[in-house]
Length: 112
Length: 112
Image (tube, each protein chain N blue to C red):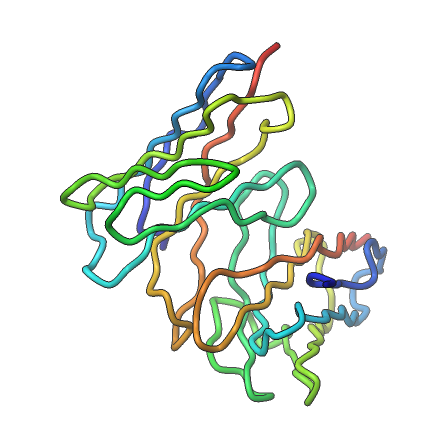
């Protein structure tokens, strides 16, 4: 049973560009959450999706947007990239009914 | 903000028990205590969770005080592979309007 799959694993972008990160949740999970983790810090919550809608959002600007598809997979989009957006981006899935999160291995984004 | 406080770092000798404390003095009656760990540059890994009673699984034991204001994660025989950042999180079990809020965690170093 595959866990949470994220792609790509690494990415280098230039300031001002746009990026899309992808996440496939664990089988049986319908809720996807995204986190940003800067070096040396704990993961920071970006937003959560279920039923194809953003349900909860952390303290991130609207340059960060997302989408959830009918098969529960999800995308994170970041526009107008800043150097400070360089981080590990983590996707976590969970069942809507509750329980713990299963995290993917993350996408390492470097903005130059 | 995270509802837990943990020591920033701890050392443990290989083969000995590692006891990681967590304070959650404002925990409410229906909130669970979850523990995750993150090995360098990987996604957080679920360890264990509990509500009131002590819990044990193949990875660790969780001891929750009777007043539920603190808990201790115990790794009974620490190995070098247990070196990681350990996060203690409290939240309701279901996902309705909730997300995992990570603090800075405890960096555990298992020494040979």
